[in-house]
Length: 390
Image 1 (tube, rainbow, N blue to C red):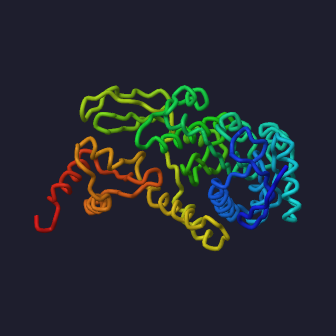
Image 2: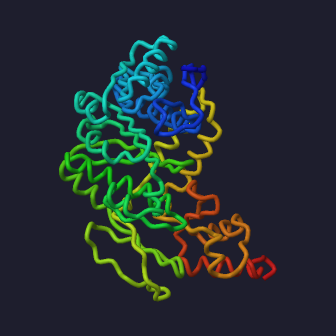
Image 3: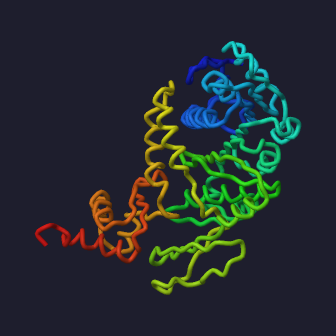
């Protein structure tokens, strides 16, 4: 087997030569996920600063071992990392890579992710689930076996299901109906968080979301797991549905598992499309993001600029409402060309509404301005009715 050495963060790892990254490859290194690993290093470092003891980490999908190796070398106060993989070649390569980096606090196990978590029940402060595809079948083991106060880091690459391209797989895996809208990636994140929250609730646990994002081909959620029956019940109040009007783009949220959801849009009388159940609570902790950005300044990360750009966008939109508007989609409905998005945002800000860009979409705006007022504002800007001479 031909191999080559790559460098990432503070580690060097030996990786097999495969022409294409795919689930069929016995083990692979995916360079596209470097920023994912950079973000994980940053978030776990900040999490470690918040707890009063050294931490244990489980990387349940070890692959080449790069994630576990980086956690060992780049996160202060790591007592132990357990790296698991079902593939014997991956286990062999991971062990070699720990030796290559002179790492002694990483244990590599040949194990299915669920069995790995069950056999180390309650021993982990951080559980990282980064599978090729859906994390659905591993979420219950994660929920049951992480310590209260621990951090879960969960990725999903089945975005076609979560974002509404394919409805049945989302219903089957996450128990939710997705919706193909301009904000479908945000819906996907919210479906994933609601699914995790429901799995935690079985064990009287609930989550506090620190950070989440949709990047490239995957979604990722970082959340603290806490325990308590009453607070778990309260956390479930954040789950509900989004009703979206494809005709005029009006949308509204309804909380609850079986709420009464209106069928028609009050603005235009069009028929609503509905997505859910999904998470309608916060998907970012603004203070945590700020502190993590400060910490990142002192980290050696290849993707630092990209990471900081993502954090800054999420920081700005953290206090915004659920869902956002796509200026191009609105202008298409209005049958006009789009004005400069910054001109629109400046006027929204001048009128005292919340406004930010969103990391989910380049042409997206997150605002609490009513949609009819936003549409009229865009028309006025196009007709040059808002200049100082007017």
